[in-house]
Structures are given as structure tokens and as C-alpha cells.
Length: 221
Image 1 (cartoon, rainbow, N blue to C red):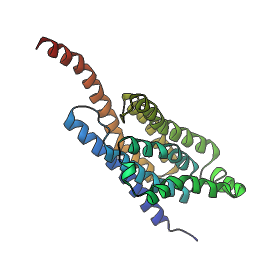
Image 2 (spheres, one colour; image 1 turned 60 degrees about the vertical axis):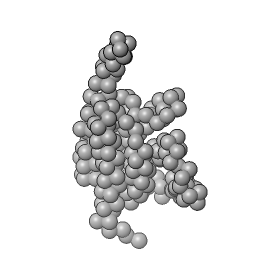
Image 3 (cartoon, rainbow, N blue to C red; image 1 turned 180 degrees about the vertical axis):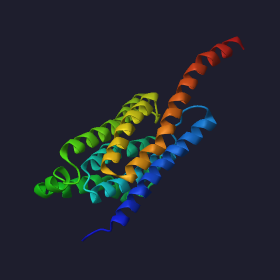
Image 4 (cartoon, one colour; image 1 turned 90 degrees about the vertical axis):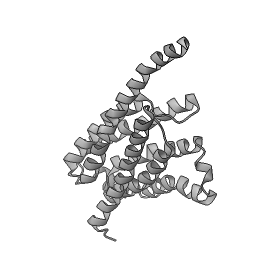
């Protein structure tokens, strides 16, 4: 069944709306607190956006998008779990959400020849461009692997400065890939977060510089 291109783009833009909303909410809350925060709503919006963007990548036969979402999907769930949100969700819904990527990947690989033809030998995405886009998605997604490792060691969900630095690098590559693919969803979605990534780095550095001074002040009281 042929899917309307308009519907495909609508799904993509809604997915990016969730991702942009998570960034803006995190940014606003961090500005109010004068330090970088990792709010629960950030991870809820991340998971919802990931499900939709995975669907968009599937409809666009874009392997690089699918790859990026599969890597980060379960890290979103881990952060929701450590914040105590995940177990508030009804068990059947949790199982359904957990099984989505596994079911999708299993379905894709059930016909390996068709998968390779549709996603890896796509006339609309030449192999060099596919490799470039996939590299951008992997770098961009590695920020969540880094965030998970950093948070796991602290036993709490945080968004360290390395997360935002990796975000900037990966986002730049994805924007370039989106330009080559003439993909407004990727271009618009990544451009929105660029300013927030830079601002979080600034906030983090301000917080780090202020902490020793605050400690010195506390010692004199």
C-alpha cells in the first residue's frame, strides 16, 4: 500500500516536534534553576519522539534514521526507570513499548534481501551518503550512550557537558545529511536544538565556575 508523502512528512514533523519540545523544556527549566537539569519530561518526550521518528525512517526507507533511534530507545527507558516514572506505566503498555524495536528489526530482517534492497541499496540514498548520514546518527546517538554511562556511575539521571558537546557535532553532520537529502524534517528538527546545546554548555561552565566560589563563601560563614 502506497503511503501518502504528506502523511510521512506529518509523522516526521510531529516526531521532531516532540524532540524540539524536550530540548526547549529542558532549556527553560535549566535557565530557571541556573544549572543543567535532566527533567523527567525530557525522557518522556524523547521516547514518544523516538517511536514516531523510527516510523518516519521506516516510511522513508532511511536506514541511518532507524539506526539512530534503535540505539537510543532503551536508554530513554532506562532514564525513565531510574527517575521512577517507568514503573508507573501499566505493565501491558510497558511490554508493548519495550518490544516495538525488537519486533520492527525482526520484521525487517525476516526478508534480508528486500531489506538490503530497500534500505541499503536505495536509489534515493547513495551508499556514500548513507554512510555519512549513518555516521552522523551514530555520533549523535552516542551522546545518550555517554549520558547513560555517566548517569549509571552516579546512580542518577544527569545530562553532563559531554552530552551537549557530542550533540553539537552529531547534529551538524545530520543537518548536512538532511541538506543533501532535501529532508526538511531533519534540517528543521536539528536546527532547533543547536542553540539549546550551546546554551547548556554555557550554563554548565557557569555552574562549574561558580561552585568553588560558593564553597569558599560557605566556609567563611
